[in-house]
Amino acid sequence: MIINDKQLSIIDSDGNEHLMEILFTYEHDERKKKYVFFYDKNTPEDIIAMEYNDEGELFEIESDEEYEEVEEVFNAFMEENEPEEDA
Image (cartoon, rainbow, N blue to C red):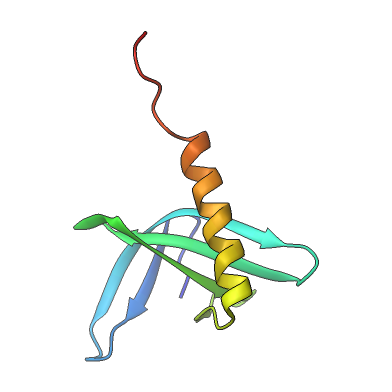
């Protein structure tokens, strides 16, 4: 469940709650779907992407086409936010 614009809470299969950091969100206007990219502070290199609704509920991305598009959005975000190297 999305708590605010910087954090969300997920429950794992053992029933344990984990507070995650939101990297960014993305909306697909044609599909009318929203996606959130997030990570655990302990493993920031493992980015997770899921769909969410207006109530802040999270859903897995089910189609390959949708997943590929979300992956492209993530790659573009990472390129835009890559630290600049000193020249």
